[in-house]
Length: 359
Ligand code: F6P
Image (cartoon, protein in one colour):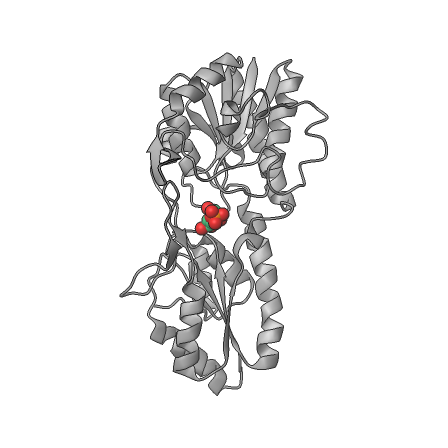
């Protein structure tokens, strides 16, 4: 058995731990493992530059490292690959070439580590004859098929620590601090880091906000002598009567979200008269070492993926259904996005603590 493994989409702390677990579990079975660099691109690179044989040595000491030793891409979809002709960008389908190369290098199975986008691509490759097993990855925690994905705990830990640090400087300067966190269309990072970090207001995509509620909450705090405020805003949050804030679109890429903290900060400063600063945590949430929880989860995902290859469970992803790792059909895995349930205990806790959720 020769397994090929790749990482696709935005990186997440824990990818290297998955690669290590896949490699060691496969080698123990007497199999061979090859890593494809840069998503699927490595298969098309000249010679063997884009491929790396994963030996025990290659995966030694990597479980605690952030990023991915294989590299990743979140543009250049193989079914809509971007090329430039006469200064014009167009898309072409290079998937047949990838399937041909997969077979040429002797691949028997692919372990694709990625998010919903990567699974959409992988399920199309399955139809074209590549036996694939998926491993779910996202810091956004928005995959409904699995109770948890690695990367989320690390992102929340980093965001919480940042919010903790903002309390003291906000209080010293009597400022409003608006902190923008990642998460795309789901408010998991904002909700968890906001509650854990004692934010005074948390704005989520799941609850379109009324900014006057936030103004009210902050004015009340200042009026009783608590002269600072921390507002955590998910990058995908939107006002009741408005749209999500975006930075731009590019052919072959998902729309980039961002800019909401700056807008809210400006507005709150104007409406309250209190000094305001906005902070975008950005990719700091994705970089660096995975927490022990993410590391363990990632190692478990990797080992389970190899067991699924052994059992011939192709077209499935590994899902965490505590305490087990279970196969879930890929199509089902990407069907529904997991957002923060408004009746969840965490949301209720936020309300009980007096945190303003903008409604
Ligand atoms: O999906 C993970 C994520 O970090 C999102 O939270 C964020 O919107 C996006 O990726 C950022 O992508 P990029 O690295 O392409 O800027």
